[in-house]
Length: 61
Image (cartoon, rainbow, N blue to C red; front, side, top):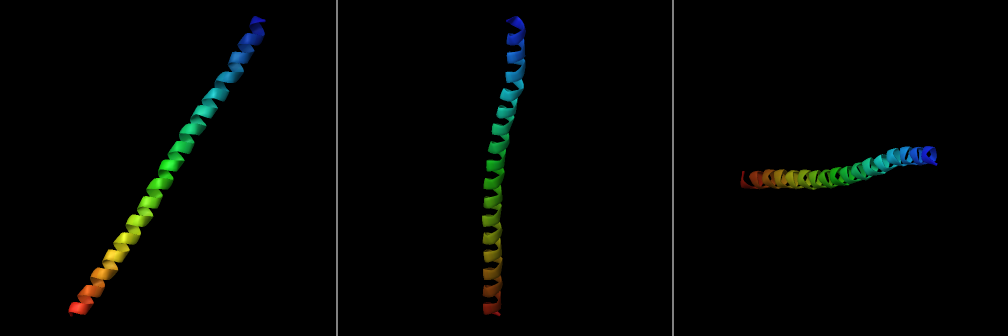
């Protein structure tokens, strides 16, 4: 009985650790995806601002 109990706890601990680390990885991936999306939006905004500034400079000249 005690041996099976030891085996059981020994087998569930790595599983819990794996589930825990998987959750952390998924959260990190979600955060990374958000930052990438923000980076794309910021990059597009910068390109838009640069092109509009270039357009206004050309219009002034």
